[in-house]
Length: 126
Image (cartoon, rainbow, N blue to C red):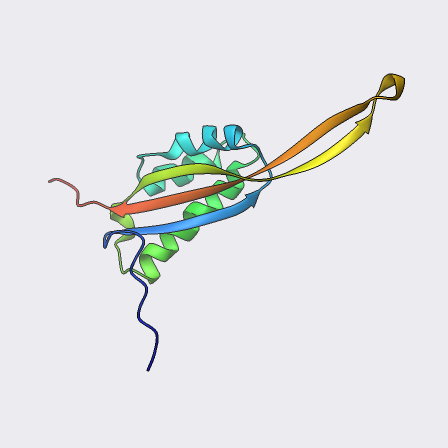
């Protein structure tokens, strides 16, 4: 007697990947995620490759993971994939401090974020 199979979290023509504990603020990460939303995956990968943002390497890694999940786990065609969703969430925040003048304490917050990318297979119109 085994466990029942978990239902899929995404549709039959979709695949997903998550990147957690990315060391940047969600606001900065959302700028890079907005850059790839709705694009074909090959165009999104080239945009991330030549982006000047530091976090774009981690976003590219997450997108490549979503593409690999689509190909290997769900048998989707890589040439017909688009980035259906790319959304950002907050994660923990490290609190650090720095001594300031007159005995005061300057608070430094170091935010972490998480990124979820869903890719969807769409058939091209002739």
